[in-house]
Image (cartoon, rainbow, N blue to C red; front, side, top):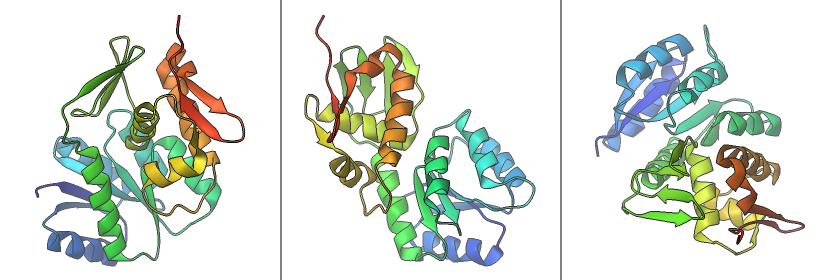
Length: 226
């Protein structure tokens, strides 16, 4: 595999630890020691970088600021590395477009496993386009268009929408959604899903109404008949 991963952390020992484990798995790596350097490297290598490991607390420019700027032009998967595990911080990160969280100290083996899971999901193998009431989803290019207009979704937003579409007309519980979209044990609450649904609805515009809230259960995608 030739995936390039950008490691952004001001601690050299953390970067070396991650790089050593990723190299063993045949990933290529790029490194940045602060936020400004991270943006510069990403701009120069955006077509090659398949995933970013991004520390939150860094000199010059913190991880949140870096993420905001990257999300203006790219939906590349981002895993945040943070020493803080407060739920509110994680919810804030998901609002900005974080795909996953790893709390320090972490197991390098678990980190590699999560990287593989995200990359395998974002690298769809099926070339297929389906139409759901004017919402077109292309599983090969991982793109979503509404009435011909491309919609920018983060990886997690895309996966959540696809899961709803794949289960059209089925009421899905929040627990079910967490287990299937987040893909591994997630120690949070349903506000994470609600936050993502809110953003997806907004991005879908008028067709956001197709995502129904099922009181006391969760959500259902249902195209309204005219």
